[in-house]
Length: 199
Ligand SMILES: NC(=O)c1ccc[n+]([C@@H]2O[C@H](COP(=O)([O-])OP(=O)(O)OC[C@H]3O[C@@H](n4cnc5c(N)ncnc54)[C@H](OP(=O)(O)O)[C@@H]3O)[C@@H](O)[C@H]2O)c1
Image 1 (tube, rainbow, N blue to C red):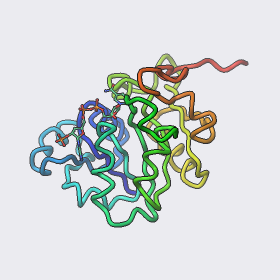
Image 2 (cartoon, rainbow, N blue to C red; image 1 turned 90 degrees about the vertical axis):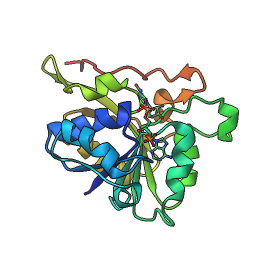
Image 3 (cartoon, rainbow, N blue to C red; image 1 turned 30 degrees about the vertical axis):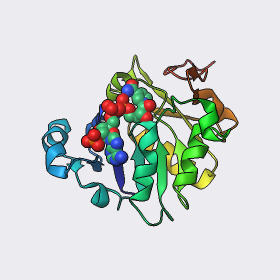
């Protein structure tokens, strides 16, 4: 598996820290050239490699950490998304009418034709996402949803490798609705990050 984070702001850097903590290689990219991102990437860790957008998109798993409205620009950067997994860490803070009545990740998936899309990492604030997920003897929870089981399983494995406890919610418009932002309304599991199992 090869990974790239597109968007190197608060969430992109938080996720890069999670990869660095576990020595997993990850490319990071934005609209700026690689050289502009390289000092910050190096400061996070040696496994975080700044690349141009085009080079970063060679990875087979692409994490979207750009403002929601920018996802279409990222999608346009490749002629085909066949064979790729796209991880949507974005929140659509736009009126639901602008999403054709779809959950925001299903709307995003339309732009990435051929890719398999998994929603995860969107429900934690960046500072929480950046912090060590091992907390008080437990693992911080991340909620995954997606319409494609083949893609959700390896992304759950990645979340585990990064130290999180993945919880699979099912399809985007089913359990996934619990981690969806709809305009200014947050799904009920957004910001939830730890839970205790019943014994
Ligand atoms: N902040 C949070 O706590 C939080 C938590 C969960 C989810 N989210 C979601 O995560 C996403 C990112 O939020 P953020 O707070 O990290 O935003 P941010 O700090 O503003 O960073 C956005 C990044 O996206 C890059 N970017 C913008 N347009 C791009 C494009 N067309 N192609 C490639 N890169 C592009 C920007 O870099 P350049 O200007 O160099 O291109 C910047 O590095 C949003 O969708 C947000 O809803 C945020």
